[in-house]
Length: 453
Ligand code: SF4
Ligand code: SF3
Image 1 (spheres, helix red, strand yellow):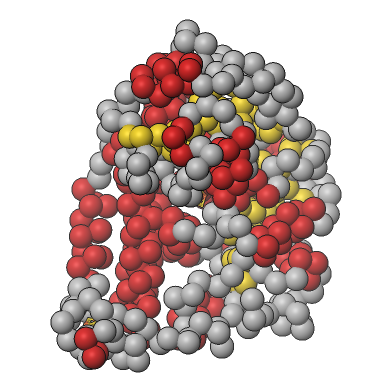
Image 2 (cartoon, protein in one colour):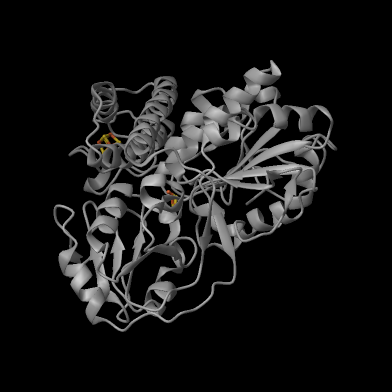
């Protein structure tokens, strides 16, 4: 049992709804709870694609194939259209492939406009003077802001998912792109209160602003909060003026220097070296540890997991989940860093490219590589990425910190049987299973849904 079945379903989208309030056991129309939950699953994946396609559109890119899929998929969830559970699993896989297409479009336009990311050290302190802190994923906003702040004396800092901006040549060439402040999105009440300048929120995640800083918060489409100052048409002049009027930031050294900017081409330029290190046993296993983060205590799993990995392992990471681990100094294996930051969540396309290229180099399938994915999820972009990985045939993904609440036993059965999905459990036992030191059937290594998490 998943423990998620307190309510079998809840649907109130049509006039037939039970008692005029909601269908909770089975639809008056005949919709089953599993179909209803799979419809929600599809809607969540669509929301993720929408977020990435919105970013691509901001860069001037759109795609008829993705648009047509979105229309078809939304329509499938309308009343009295589709009662077939299996077809919703197929639609979820199709959504996964559409998300692959969307992430690639987005990556290509980022590279075309800002250059191929390259490994870049990023300070985490502040420089004396006025500053603006930028969070979210919109790299075009960062580029426009850097252009408009050039020569004004206002420094620009990155927060959360904006960290990878430091790796792009066309963005890092601005000397006043001064560093990274804070960690994942959920630290923003504290981080934004402490920061004395304006804060620009370009995409999710925003937390409703606290009184200490809400008059310094600027939002841009699609982000909105009550009374938020809006930036229109990438015109940051009001915010820059505001920065010059607010108290300066102090000269302060950060506790760590982070490194970001490991694109797929950078990693694959090291492919012959990686091959040699794997074949001589000096690299035993690769892990992808990252994804969307949440403030739950259970998120501690991911840091502890990486800390306990043996020294002959390499960790790829991405998205805001990286902040659980990117301050760890794990050194390198003969020049190959042990923690490699691939970028934002949408840069999962680079992780896919790296895995496919390594599989080709070793002459095996992706599932035969010494590679395990340990993915954290929070919002619905992560659902889209999960379906991308499943649609590409990736098996044995470990998911955490909790099982999706929309999964019931029927869906769970498919997730486990077809995709071998697992839920993260005990750190040490998980590592032993992943490294092949123990099989999953032994006690303590349960498949998804059976660990009670
Ligand atoms: Fe109920 Fe079906 Fe209408 Fe949803 S679509 S409210 S399940 S009758
Ligand atoms: Fe994080 Fe919101 Fe999703 Fe782009 S900033 S990964 S949670």
